[in-house]
Length: 510
Image (cartoon, rainbow, N blue to C red; front, side, top):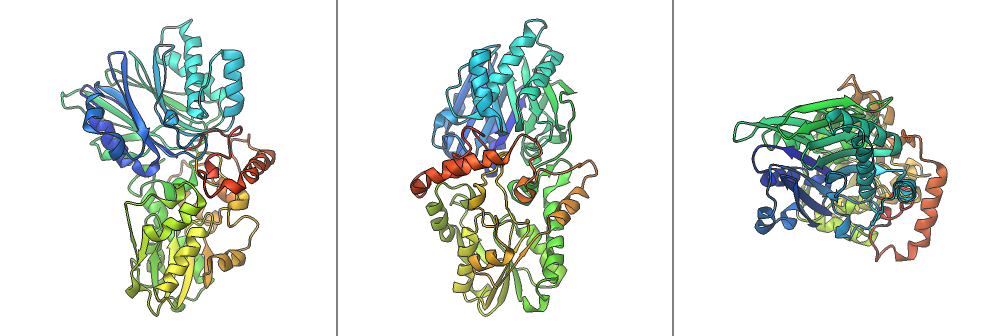
């Protein structure tokens, strides 16, 4: 998971891209980068850290030009501490290409060898984004030998890229002197949309971004999502060209976007993220009623932030008061993406503080968006007890997370997932709750799909173990587990191994 944005305008875009990245900050907090172009010359600044820390006035002054792109990075493999792997990436031939990527190539290791042995291109990092930009550069070079670099030629190159790479990818690239090229994987796993506005000089302005909130928050009107397998090209005058480049595209967006990753005010593949979470709360309430009599619950309390819509809808459905029982310190990084399990456990109480009056003497139902490793949930249940709760029930708006994710979400190997090979009762005992209720996966898919008839399915591998790209095997996960077990003694002091474990199979996730 990363946040990406690209802009074609008639006026300077440095501030515009900065503002868009702030709106996408939730998608990645490890690093940020911006590239702008003035004529055919690129200007780049990228570094580790949050957007507000990476870019200072002097950096912004060094980013002139009316076209540009940016990214906020969330690493799940590769070298999480290397600024070299921060995006954007640049290659100088052909034409000069700058690229940002959200996703995860599942065949990056094989492609890296292929690039060296066949295409004669050297890859210098562990980043699959460097692999991707070199694949694109090679295919553009092939078509440019026979054709001028027209939109049709670029789409032909994207078709060739689609045939070579596997996994999830949403890509925005700038081609010096030509314009902006954006494309999405044939399954539509990672999100990408575009919108239009009128620039201050009256000319056309086009923005491509991971989420609609980046468009709306910068004064652009959402036009539509980029379709699975589709490529769009925006020339320097703001004219938009598009073509379907994949053979058999199908729309299967990542379910975890709706559960947790995306901002609730985004519209993603025609689905309101907020409404999706409300619907999940309603189906969760139905599961709850069959497990715990509502009269045994005094209050429903969400675990900030993503679970709030589901918790509100559940509370309304069972007729119990909804209360904010935890205050979140917004200046502590999200535990889901923090390096090191020891740091993750320690950070929970730094991040959340209980409001005692909402817990004392009550039977409380805590609602979270999901339960991954279980360590955070265990700590939060104990916080509720320490605040005076008589009974603590836990409900997850997502089904049990039983399988690793290879499409760009920081999911650990299956042995680290609390739900893998454990019953709900065993998980309940581990986290210390008086009862535990999970979302039903069939119901969850149904109520989200109802919001857009075009949805043919979902990428929900962490819940159902189905890897829709068809190139991930059990042997791959055995190799990951073996590698991680050999590193186990270093776990507390090293970066989160879920970021490193997929090297050789999946080089870099978002």
